[in-house]
Every structure is written in C-alpha cells, then in structure tokens.
Length: 303
Image (tube, rainbow, N blue to C red; front, side, top):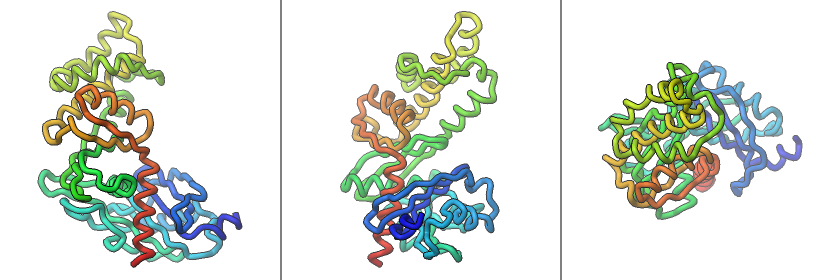
C-alpha cells in the first residue's frame, strides 16, 4: 500500500447511480490500481460522498491530498455537488468548467454534464467517454452510440457534440425481463445469437409491429416450446431494433459509427448496425472513460 501511495499522483473517479469506480493514477496517465464500490449516488446523502470515496481509497493516498477528477452522477442535483450542464453544441466539458468540491482528503473536481434544450435531454458521464473517444481518435466525426441502461446517441463534428438522444432501452429490458409477464419466458443466462439476428432486422424495419410481438414470446413458449434463450435474445432484438429505427430517423446510421460500451452489449448493437450497412468501430467504455478523465487531468496540470 505504501508503494502505491508513493506512486499515485491523482485519482480518477467514475461515479454512477449504483456503483463507483476509482483508479489510482500516475501523472503520465498510467493506471496503478482500480477499485470498485457499490456506494453509488442513489444510496448516498450529500455528506456521505467524501467518506465513501475515502473509505474506498483507504490509505492508498498516503496522507497526500491528491487531485481527484470525477465524472458521472456525483455531479447530479442529488449528488455530491451539482455540476452545471454545458449546452450543445459544445466540446466535451473541460476541467475549467468543473465544479470544485470542498473536501479534506482530496482536491475534488466534478466534471459537468451536457444538456440539450430542444428536444430536452441531458447526459452525465457519457460526455467524458466522448472526450476519451476524441483523445484516442482525434478528428473523429460521425455518430457515437453509447449503449447502456439509458443508451445515448450523439453526433460529433469538429470536436463538438452537436446533438444527442437518449433511449431507455436497457432499463426497459430489465423491467420487462424481470417484472413483467415475460419474466418466466426469458429466464436464461444463455445468449442465442441467431435468434437475435433474425429478429433485429425485422424490428429495425418495422419497429411498431415488433412491439406487438412481445407477448408472442410468452405464447410461443407455452404453445410451441420457444426456448428461454431464444426468447431473451428476441426481446433484446425487438427493443434494440426499435431504438435503432428511431435513431435512424435522426442520424445518418449508414456512415461511420463508434460504439462505446461493454463487450456483450457492444456486439449486439454492432450486429444490428452492420445489418443496415453501418461502418462500425468498437471502443471499450472503461478505457474511454479513463482516457477522458486523464485528458481532464492533463488540462488541469497545464492550466
């Protein structure tokens, strides 16, 4: 632990609603160690944020008051301190726009989220991933898809977020598969890729009709023995297909698209987008988040 404390120059923090991730970092952007906590924003009162982060880090800071760059829901109105939104079109918010939080153990700065007035929309955390994408792929222009509980689609041009949209696809999947009448029909941890591929194209082309097929997953299980793995994959395909169909009304999805997310969900979105002719590139969400936070730290050092 003492060796880590001697090496660490700053702390990178991604603070979500249900979980927190923190990295002990060197000044050159090298991650020394990553730590996880279930102390998400949704379970904390304002006065509990600093103790939660301090408990996660333990004595890893060696008594030093290190800079901590934070993105995500810690900056929400119900979070540690509200970090005001920056309006699109805008570059991903910089450290100069961050909110500095009074804290004894760390020098804390929370990066802002991004807002869109019409149609009304907000993001917190994804803008840091976009900053990481632009750090890794300078000059990137096109559409970024960030799948998750609340999936984001953003148009990027000239290093700026031009516009974006949010879809509650991940949350809808969790609710339907866990609490609706379909919960028994889709109870499987196995993924059926052919079933997904067959259903997602139909859903993209006929998204309204695909909504009428949801209950059929239960009926086919009862009457024709549809396997839970296939039902689960088809449910995912119907929801993702409807999302992509809606996104295609707003964005040019036949061009270059970057998908930023975890491995499993990225592949599902990639298969769907490839089927309509998109040129897809994949980026890991954790890596891009850390790159975005590192870019903010570099800016802090140069300010």
